[in-house]
Length: 225
Image (cartoon, rainbow, N blue to C red; front, side, top):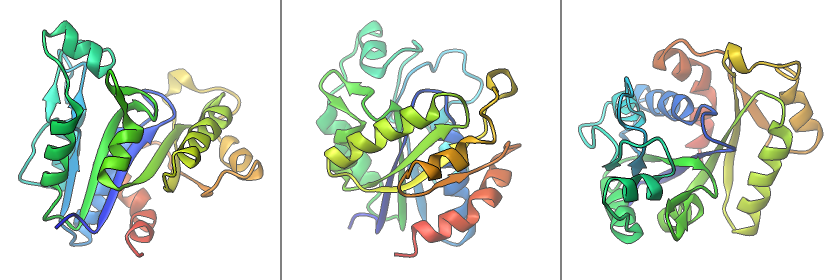
């Protein structure tokens, strides 16, 4: 039986804090006594990375399996290109089937895509197809920096056109190197332009438990219905 609550975490771009948010939510649900499985179906850039995203998600949810991304490739490029560079081919159907099966016994299944909503998972499938195939709601992560209003609204427009439900929009705190004058002002601006659902902002995160604390209330709301 599929998980009662199914979410796909996507971003407005790469490096916007998807894994920080996903790990925080997974830990918050686990702390609340829910059985959580957090999955990264495919991850690229796995060579020389100190801690892989799939590993961080698995540790946060405290799950037995999987313990890393289902498919891992060394090159830090889009997954289908990384697979090609590694002499492999990514097939969507088995990836989707394996992801679905891993969430069958969970209360909550959280799946992290690669890059943004239209980033390719295979040469012919995107995170849109992943969310549809899992019958999952989207959690959209955006960075609190210049350009986020346009990027977030574009993602929401695509989601609406594809019939996908957006459960939450989360504004993550940027690194010091990427901060600009818009930081701290984008949350109010997002809600003034009518981003729906209203955006939720998290501050600088020190570790997964800190992320879980900041996201605890939102995590409860996401599984309340």
